[in-house]
Image (cartoon, rainbow, N blue to C red; front, side, top):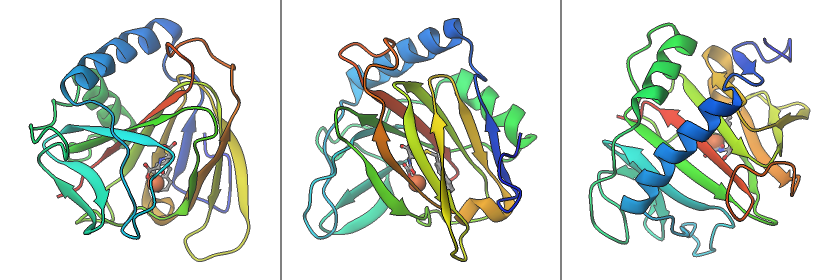
Length: 201
Ligand code: MD3
Ligand code: FE
């Protein structure tokens, strides 16, 4: 479905993953995290993110005092990122109609009051390639507005919900205002994991 008529290309698939698929995907992500642990990046200005991050794929998105970029290794361990699970590559295929595969999957961990300010995703080489996002765990209040300004509005992203950002929605402004703590018991210790699949290079 496309919930906002003035945001064509914003595809929203609530409950795209059933409960068994959520559990299976979380296990695959936990295996990746054991290789590439979550860490807390800092902005180019030196301020720590409230979200913790890691990546899967040939390249991963990182931020530090040198700026935002994609790189092939974990900033703390120096090891290559683990691969993107096949289930996510198949999900990308189905939602994007066989668009060239993603090479990066950012894994964001939100706990407690973690949030993500309004921004655009524009660190990728081809800004026409789609982005696909999968939510696991606690429901988040997600905010989105058109690239060219105007009002933003909110939608709740719950566990197993999937979004695709294609066409004009690719450069939409978006962010996470807050979590609804305790809305899911999927993630041990609570919180939310978001997987963002991108074609970065
Ligand atoms: C709309 N992550 O990592 S996912 C990010 O829930 C990011 O962790 C949020 O924004 C999160 O950059 C939102 C949904 C999403 C992802 C990419 C988009 C929405 C988007 C790209 C363009 C427009
Ligand atoms: Fe984003």
